[in-house]
Image (tube, rainbow, N blue to C red):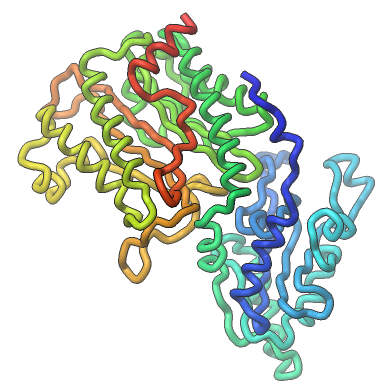
Length: 446
């Protein structure tokens, strides 16, 4: 399933990253300096590395996708406010491992005011730090580099006042993560592309499903659609058939799908660093059973209630509360819990069947950065924030006090939602979730 490929003709726009750096420079001020390093390559086995993806903060600020790179943002510095240290061009190395931008490319393609070989970082960082009052650096993102930078700072301090290193260390995490929480129009455009291809993968998997198919074959279908459209998975795909759908982070994807199973798929594509994240649950044979449909209708109603609560001015937990109320009412109607809504929520008896939150931020990370509370209170949703809405109900085999017809039912329905100044925007609406629409799509393939 190949979609419109026009998006593949566009590279990251250096102007977007320049705007982000300018916003960060305004926050750190003339007395500050920010140093952010790309995370290193990681070995998979022997001489094979994992496919490289830089840490999201570094990519957000630079758009630079190579390892062994360090960005320095020094407002007002005479050699330029944005300095990038990176690998220099090396024809022999590039023959084996591909093209490098080099220091020239760092300036011409990625907008650096100045660029130096990565090997010169240690000898130049002292001069860059000198006279600055505050050093903004990451914490816990790239521990090896963070220790190296602190060691270099301590060396400068040991030299005395002539070195004039920063006296204050400030975590850059909270500053950049707060910036990343509100997506620009350019970012939202990328996320819509990721959502569109994610939805196409889910539709293809629904149509490929049937009793006798294996979970990994549906996983392959999803990844095939992602790859055809120039993308790859944003996180390990979950394909859980039958009772496997009751395992929240099931990743074996090895079982044969049986007639009568529900299939829960949680999967999303990543596009230029931005993630899609969709969950759909559907019947392997194309028809919901009566018990499956009862549970599914509750989860779908909770999903819709959660989406409706994603409005500017509502609290960040409003989606969870709205979905939870619907789920608890449904559990009471099914007889799975007893009491009333308030008592079930208070004693948390619902957690046998719904044990996770309803929403998380979405962006460059699937579980994206940004605090949910400020000063101990749930923050308000604002236009440009993106979050998932993913209620579920899970009834593993052997669940006490529940009719056996419901055993092995695991259902989750997840969409990606943009908070706007009006109605929430559902980016993932291209993949059906109404039971009749799911069944109709699956009939098309039979």
